[in-house]
Image 1 (tube, rainbow, N blue to C red):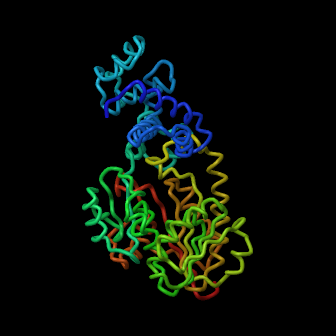
Image 2: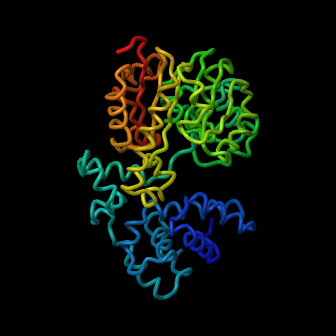
Length: 421
């Protein structure tokens, strides 16, 4: 696509709308596109890509310009990270902009402070220094500066992975098997999959491979009673339903009516008949309490800082803070404790977050185990091996973009022993 002044103006306007970061960037962009209906698919793709690119590299971009405005950040991003040469950019720039753009190519990312190279704000650097060396922080930061691939999950009630890959290829969409999930497909590029017949007929859903692995850790059996405690729009609930061959019963709990409403069309497409969405007010809702001691498997994908998803949601590192993480930790502990009450003896609970902070992960699990002696910690690598998934990250499932190509994920598997302690 040839860059025009109009592209630059629209991308600048979109970035100006996003940068106060009062609301999620993807939500602001959706509103922006709704307010500008004449933008074509290529225009929207360019705007979204550049806005998220600027957010991923914001610290460096701000350090490279004298006055950080949406337009100056955009120009530097295009020059430094999109590889546009000055011949392409200067006709779109003012005389003053052209002058400082000439010097930008010489500014090196490697010469910047660690926080700028890693693109982590001070509050997060302070936390990371508590459990990581500088080189590990830099590796993590760099891995989160790349756009995430698009992963699909095959609905095994309706299709096989090989069938879906072959069908995608016929439509000119290149995809291959994910390395760990037996039902995952990783696409090359970002095709508009929501317009594909495979998607519309419920044969595939968009779901990161790391998220898919949570279903295999829980490993529900056909006739189990299962609760997805923080179901959101239900991606994991739908996967659990397919693993259970649409038998047994799954309760998809969430305290957001909007999120559960987003599950309805997905549920209809899926062909499942064993999934029951349930709106709850909080973790102590009567709908939760009436299931005490009756459930075989519980999945708690807890509300968290979301820092493992920075490839997709780079704005989160500025929208979260030490204070918000403290609030989340209280929520995580309360939800885990409430969800654990649902299990039958011998039942399994999987606690998961898309965060890499130990205080949201190992520490929450350890504090829970200290207060609940009837629960034992299972080894995630052994549970995955039972599902013929050769992925060994030890006792806990710990995934990272750099090592596994997934979002940053953490999971722990717990079992309620059959006897009183």
